[in-house]
Amino acid sequence: MTTHDGTDAHATISDGRAVLGIELGSTRIKAVLVTPAGVPLASGGHDWENQFVDRMWTYSLDAVWTGLRAAYAALVDDVEARYGVRPTSFAAIGVSAMMHGYLAFDADGELLAPFRTWRNTTTERAATELTELLGYNIPLRWSIAHLYQAILDAEPHVPQVSFLTTLAGYVHWRLTGEKVVGVGDASGMFPIDPATHDYDAALVARYDSHVAGRWNGPALADLLPRVLVAGQDAGRLTADGAALLDPSGALEGGVPLCPPEGDAGTGMVATNAVAPRTGNISVGTSIFAMIVLERPLTRVHTEIDLVTTPGGDLVAMVHCNNGASELGAWAEVFGQFAAALGHPSTPDAVFGALLREALAGEADGGGMLAYNYLAGEPVTGLTEGRPLVVRTPGSRMTLANLMRAQVYGVFGTLALGMRVLDDEGVELDAMFAHGGLFKTEGVAQRLLAAALGTSVAVGESAGEGGAWGIAVLAAYLAVAGEQDLGTFLTGTIFGDAGSVVVEPDADDVAGFAAFLERYSAGLAIEAAAADAI
Image 1 (cartoon, helix red, strand yellow):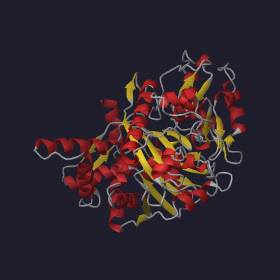
Image 2 (cartoon, helix red, strand yellow):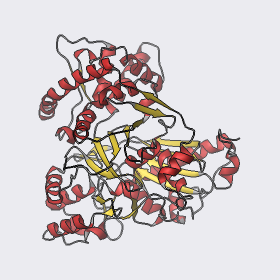
Image 3 (cartoon, helix red, strand yellow):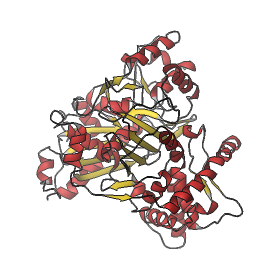
Image 4 (cartoon, helix red, strand yellow):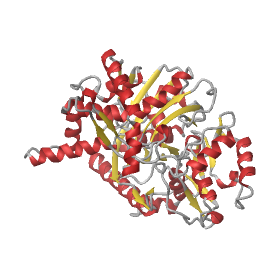
């Protein structure tokens, strides 16, 4: 069987020339196999959920490895079903995962505290103090904020901390023995100097000096993983690492791995948005926009994170903790309703029908208001979330208006954060969107264009997501010495890929503006709900 670009898929897989990408997302672990040119060959996945334990959002490390093995096994089964061969080796492997959070280990490599994910907002004091100290916005979810908060709280495990990493960095470490992270993932741990593509040395020194009286552990540079940029050698799969991923013993060691990256970086790659004046928006459990900057921002903004592309270029990131999960919960309820009426439908069919119904709603959602806040939301200053639907007696309660308000609610906080970049004069040539929300053609894309007031492109890879993006970064290892990442993406990966561009509709823009005005005023309701319930 050949792919659409003429690649012999069977030979590519059996000869070990295919490339494997794995991403640990918030609700799904996905593995994809691609050709060296990025053409998808097969995939496998495993659903998982974070847990709220002792007021902390977490995943157990057992769940990490159970999920990785299940996703890999499903991929291998898919390969065999499609091509009649079971892979034993690959040209390269890449690992990606949700960014930020806190994974602290002692000198023996033992986890000292349950993994604290990006969703946790318990680090306000640390983030505020570090932002003032460093003159650089340190968001609540960044790894350094979690570490410093643990120091401030004198948590018992702190004296034993010997190594701090991200989820992608942890998995890569276990697979290869290398304590490294990609520069994009590293930029969610501690500020990066775009000139050196490494942790900012001056800020590292300032931090070390500040904590000297409270901290007797390693210097920060020795505590954090080593930083690598896209295309650099990040180690090889060990025999133990291969057994972790594939207990059957079929997978061979020795496969090169690319630097592990965060989901923000793989989103940029998946949308070909790594050049200045390009941007992308990723919608999943969280929602975030990434804009590659031509120049640094003029001042510190607490709504804006400064991170990097996988190649190390500076990026302005508007990250919102709450994305499409509440919209998905509503779709599940309507699916149950359809089944109760004797008309069961697949989740995708229900979700698609509800999204299309949103286009029939009034431009402002009929006066309805929806908040998707399952967790706290730093952009709007809320430490806890309560999903809400609010309306006045005069609002028009219809299915179409309810669904339009729900979709608008997914984009509400993001739109507030993007206003800051508008005020900074940041300009965009192209904004790309990706994630499962955009699989239903023309709905979320149109309403996102209205929310941002700019054209939005959705490419053919929009539904592939971060697992495909990290597979592409792994494929880049083979040519990194010959061309930069942007050239590889434009020429090899996206050369003949199509996309659909939607311009903002004037009525939708005005309707969303009215919705956002209500949304901003109603944040007091959100705060009151969190206090009361």
